[in-house]
Every structure is written in C-alpha cells, then in structure tokens.
Image (cartoon, rainbow, N blue to C red):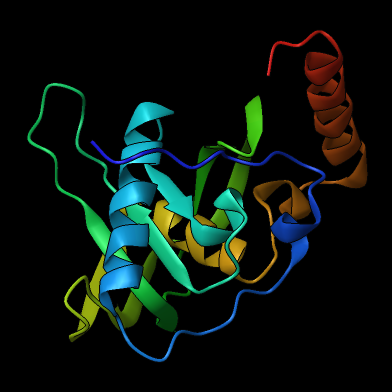
Length: 172
C-alpha cells in the first residue's frame, strides 16, 4: 500500500490555483495517480484532483463504484471538456476539501472529455448523471474553481464559516 497524500482544505491557496498541463504520463505521474486513488478511497470519496493534495498538475482520479462493487478507477491527465449538452442537471455535490458540506449545483447534463489515460494514451469519455457532475467538479478543481463558487455569496460564506468552525473544534 502506498503512502497517502494529505487532502488540503479551504481556504488553501492551491485550491484556487490553475494546475499546469503535463507533457506526458510518466512513471512518476502513474505513481501520483496510484497515490491519489489510495487517498481518495481512504477519505472516502469518488473523485480527487491534484490541487486537493497540493500538486499543481492537471491530473484527476475518480471511481463511482460503491463500497460493495468492484473498483473501477478512472485516471485522467490533461482532461478537457470538448462537448457540453444544453440540457442541465442539478445534483447535490460535496468535496473532500470542503469537509462535511454539500449543496446543489447545476451543470451541463452530459459532457464529453478528452484526456490522457493511465498509460498515456489519448482517450475520450462521454459522461452523464453522477459521472458527468463528478468529472466536471474535478476539472473545475484543476481550473481553481470550487463547487461553492457556483453558490450565492450568502450560501458560500455560510459553508466557509462552518468549515472554519469544524477546524477550530479540531473535527477536520
């Protein structure tokens, strides 16, 4: 078992930074993907972007399999949305970097993403439902955007205050 990364929380500056593209998927990048997956499973979560572990490269991992299902990890380097449906979808989203908080977020219902896979091969994924929300949420991280940025300033500030309170109580 590889060691785990520490997941950073708001208001850490890396969460608002734009991650840099990688040149190619090297052994170091694959090791990063493996460690990110282990960190995500341990959290537990369904997605994790490099910014959330204080690495500013364009790498994300996801796995929507339930706890009793076979793991089905998706690793993406340099993901880029190449299609968004006009139809919208609203789902409740949470974030490992904004612990114990969730809110409804509206996003395109279907997206197509091109990326480099775990082996560095060009790949495309068409996503809808939870997978669509998850991949958009993680790509947002790579662009320095958090799900709370889609909320009203009142809701966003309430969530940030709750996270600060949890930190002060040493609950996160």
